Amino acid sequence: MGRGDSLRVFDGQNGEWRADIAETGKRGGSLQVIEQTRPQRNPPDLWLLFAPIKKARTDFIVEKATELGAARILPVQTEFTNADRVRQDRLQFHAIEAAEQCGGTYVPEVAELARLEQVLHHWPEGRHLMFCDESLAGRSSALTGGLAGPWGILIGPEGGFSDAERARLAALDLAHAVSLGPRILRADTAAAAAMTMWQQAYGDWS
Image (cartoon, rainbow, N blue to C red; front, side, top):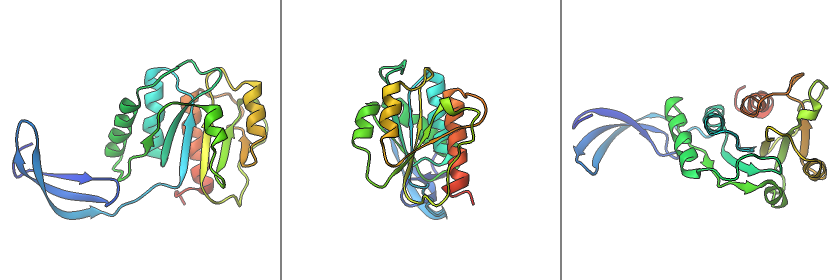
């Protein structure tokens, strides 16, 4: 693109705007903002917690979480998590790309990898947690109504949760164990399915 060309920009706070390229250079340039094309639209107050898996599938989770309306994305390390580190900056870039591709005006923060036990220890008061429990596959277990407010969704690793983690989650007052249907889903599929379930029950899809 060159001087005089138009593009659309957003900063995550003030909606989408049409801008013209005023100056270009090897190390940068400047834009002239012309008019707002869409108002700011923020997602519901929903966090997605997931145990990192293989690189491409972790990227998929971040991309789909952004598209489906996560406000914050938190990679967590469980006892059976295979990955012991993630590139937070790379995952954040994938979230930006996903917002651009789907016409979003909000980019969720991708947090640094943290141990699940630490995240649960500091879990915010009043935030519900949808705990997707693969051991409930095939049983009737879904979200119950009337639980408004901020939420989180927790997706476990490919090896499942340990007994100690299940006990810790069961002791959490605001945790709600749910089934994602009659089949055990891969982690990346489970993340998309869980967010779809939550959006239909409590989100901004209605």
